[in-house]
Image (tube, rainbow, N blue to C red; front, side):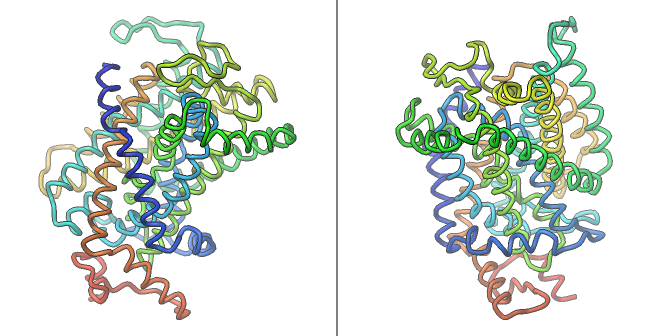
Length: 494
């Protein structure tokens, strides 16, 4: 299975996808005139500008839901993997992906808002919806919906729970082995982690999207701030090392130990996995929010990319590099740098846990395990919401009994299984899901731009109203020449 998945990943994550991701980000950055930099203060203002309604969640809740998907295993274990396989220079390319990807995030999230619908009393939207309405290609929309349903309902949750289990085993030990029969021998700590995570997940997801939004708006900001505060402590203790680490990141980005291609490849791959810009996940939460103008939520979602990569991922990278708690072992090669034991798993939270342990002792490993639990758990909630939205899209044309109950049970089974399987298999499956979604979504939003430019039209309209000093924004898609934005047309017509 590992060989099959690796072969498929080699096809999906070719240099072409890396070029498309970076190229699309640069393309939208230029076309929006660097919207991610020009309107940075406006992004901050909009975070708390809208309120929750009966149909939709607030901008901040939508940000929290999307951040719960962005801030997860990729910020801890993913950064470690990027460094371990691509060298310190991979961090630089993660930053590049974040800067350019913020423009892509604006475009896809604005599209999610423009083409959203009301489904059973709540807002729904995402790539499947805007592919059908903006491109008029239902078959393409169905492919994306089915791919996302499989990726977010089955493949990706296991990556998150696997990281939780590995962090728990490192923090609390894995000496006690339990024979489970068909599942083989499993460390007791992993088995307990699997039962706890699966049970709590079930309690939350059976409560619906509002419960998910209320849970994530509290947990995500708290844990992200706590994690970054810990990183600042580590940096402060080793402040004299900071210039050397920054120089190493920038220098190795172009002449890295692991080769230029490895640094770029792993930086882009883990950057996209972490911040999800262009992947097509962010528009689902963006569409669920209650805003006056679609561009508003697009800007908020662009800011979430900064939070994920420039803040949280950078926190992990600095902790690992400043303490020297890493190895560099490119795939198919021997160790280029070996500061840790050879059996240290690269695709795991081990680098981060060892970095903190080297400074603050045993509590460091436990802190990372706790932080990763909340990061990964909220990401699994986001995955469920995304999968649920695509089930809602599919059932517009095809219904089957108890579809959401089946989805919840399948996702919970995937989460439990993920806690006990091999980390390399879990990450490979997750990469496959992310890569296919990214291909489908980025191609779609580029074609949509070529046809009608709805996200750019929305941005110009929003900026014109902002420059005019309006107190309340409006959005008239027909006036802007945007077709099939049915929700906004009906709202304007009363």
